[in-house]
Image 1 (spheres, helix red, strand yellow):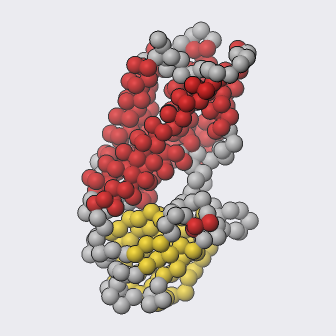
Image 2 (cartoon, helix red, strand yellow):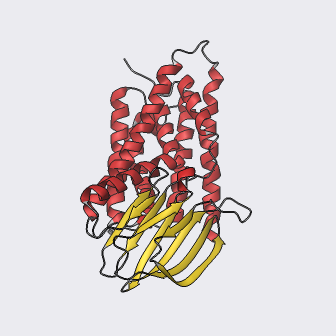
Image 3 (tube, helix red, strand yellow):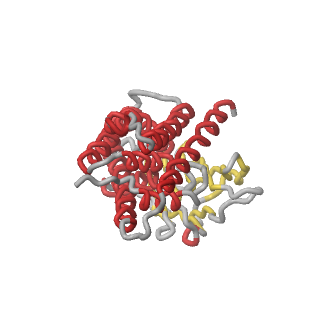
Length: 335
């Protein structure tokens, strides 16, 4: 039996759950710690902490072992919505075996991504969380650590990327039938996996701001298709949803690649890191779809049936938020 995933009762709940989120498409901002070895036993440190307005920053603080010495005093400034601190440190024998701790992280709801670049070209990427706010520098991270770190980063990125989730939600409101749903999700997955891999490996490039604007526009397009379909004029998305999902999925893949480029790939484990990041993205996407289907199942139990106009609320909410992003991101071309 065909199942309309766009059942208004469930998707109305989903839209209401999403609306309290800020119109910033990437609200969950982690801290970022970059340590770059510039000479033997000498390192430049870049420490980025999310700002909270009015020249206030998140209360998380960097702490090294006592045998790590400052070469230059920390220099700090607010740049946009980030508090940035720079310094130089040194430790006899290098950082291997020493510990870095993020004080205050255990009491927060954010993560910190740590990246160490050694002078010999090797690097380490590690994700510190409220449950595990410290890290002991290793000589060479295990394959399991690389895989786990990048998979977790992939899950975190898709679940904090509200624009990507709104696009998936809009598709679910159009697609009718389980077979078409599977085909649509598969097409979206294949497409963004292709461009994610090609862009992350440097084979293709796309400017970030225009890509982000077009991603927002893709959400507006599908939201308009929802409204047209409900008015008895099904569009391309309703007739060939996998074509739309694949086409726009290529663009969303560039968005994922942009996030991955900020993190970087470990030179010794590029294929593993790229694969597990993509797996994490897919896990996060499936978690979101499962949540929507759960809401659909719960919605069927609600009584009375909402009025016919109720479907307009999630449709216009998705389209309105995405339209705001389009103008916001276009305006950002000149800032």
